[in-house]
Length: 218
Image (tube, rainbow, N blue to C red; front, side):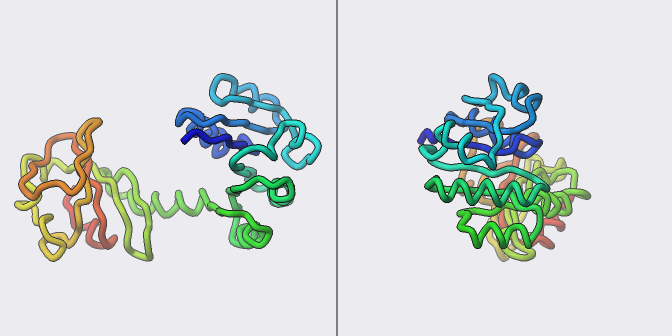
């Protein structure tokens, strides 16, 4: 469903987020005080605007109060981040997401009523730690300490073998992991059959303990 979203702060994180939201079909108002950053968003968002996200009058003039949601993507300027969130809450924006620089910043954002706090640097560090030494591991999502979802390129050693032959047919088998899906080109097969054979270029979506993921040969 199409949403109206305002993104305040167009650093690397904010600009990539705004572009992605726009590409998904949402109306995106991208706001920053840096004119060069705003110019760089031309054609990549619905409305790129050079304005101060901590100025209530400027935000009201842009009609931010009528937007479905807002993302405060301001990085290290904690004061500006908090001020922008307070203004958005006061103006009645229904759903607010904010980027936190550290735990103290995040706790402050939660106390003023931000709906979702994200820690991009921390989350990226966790992902990098998991795939740094495994060339086949593309993405990792932590669900609990030492347990997560992984997207892994099928290693050559597993090509042309079935899930059953490889010991993926039962969580208690060889690897102790669950194959949730196989991505083959643009096609995704959920809950694949045990007799499905893996091909070159396939991606496995796996669930299981981190130490078990490391057992899969590269």
